[in-house]
Length: 193
Image (cartoon, rainbow, N blue to C red; front, side, top):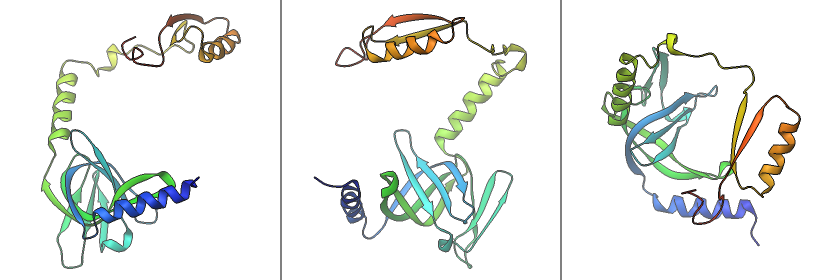
């Protein structure tokens, strides 16, 4: 029997063995944030996957914030690179894990800007603009959310523990009608049901 820590360290050694000399990864920036300690955290993603990334404070020479962007200076003799949500970049660094969260990430040593905006973010902005023009975000179409729902639909097994728990909860709120839609919750037929 292994401890969780032992498994995490085993996985960490395996992942680090993949990129002993560093790797380069291209993707679009998401979830960009600057910690109070000055570390930069973000994800890089493509159409099918995402990878956590961290750039520690001691890995860059300067950073300034403004207009939704971070201007990052990797070394004192390099140009600044603007980082923002949706920007297409190439990061270079070492693959590792963060055992406390059981996740893998890239420890960034360098960043190159590829395009002002990545393809995924461009498509998102186009869709948002199309929906705005169609009026989907217009506040005149918004309906107020009622303080309490009148009816709640429950999709679960008719005989499972979940429905018993829900029935107990809704007994304390008698003004809300509940409607059970029995479905298979496990096995091959669950997804279709």
